[in-house]
Image 1 (spheres, rainbow, N blue to C red):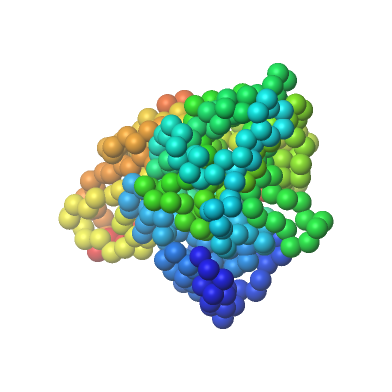
Image 2 (cartoon, rainbow, N blue to C red):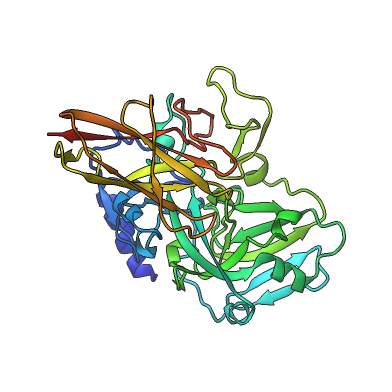
Length: 397
């Protein structure tokens, strides 16, 4: 992505009415959730709903969730800091690994590609996906449901890199830094951390490919952290530095930002905020309709196929159910191909409508840990982790 392309894209965003942001995504009213809004096409992407233009926060169009894997050119975008990389010289780019290690490393992209590689299918979902639907409203990026995507990520296991560097005794946290920077010196750099035990598990990757192609510029080229089953705040993009600490990391983006109530549903009351909070971590269970479209007209007595997606934080989806009577009874759907416990799981169900008028359909998923979606939506101050039972309205004629 060159500077000329970027200037053209940001100019288009400005023409559509999006003013430059400062740090993070600006708050924007999302209206009813179904009315059309301006879209902008950024370099390497289809036209996408713009939450913010600088740094770019772009939402995946819903039609692309009808595929098992979200195409790279439609995969949502979320950067936190205004000065993010729009061009990278691979000849000089290095991934530096240091801190509490025996052998500090500087690895080129070719060095990474020479190591044993692995591929994992995993959902990347913004912590604030669906934030615009919280009532009462909360501040932050006003995403609808499109701040998520599923991809095949290819790269090197994080633990292989750490073993090559040689962790010293007493390793506590592993801290990750990307190439994005704040517009002013006082803006905290976007650094995230994992506990050393988690970093040494089999799943976390330093990925350099997405769906069999190099990472798109807007999704973290040339390499990014992939933390399957965890919210995308940990998936640091344009990764450039990994540092092992012999104590707990307490930077802004861990100690202050992305905190949730420390209870099973991350739920609290606007009138009584929980005193005990913790960093956001594992995805909760969700499911959605992807077909037919909201507001579709269907014919009474004619069978149609309902379909959608479900996912969770790694337990795996056990069943998905649909209700046609406002949740009084539920019908189990047929699950599609299992691409792994961190991936979207597709579902479908044949339905023959028999009563004319508007019908509201409901969907809920249950994972193998028996966690499920509930009818009562959660609320928390950050607008994180929404997983209410989703609905779809259609008209039967």
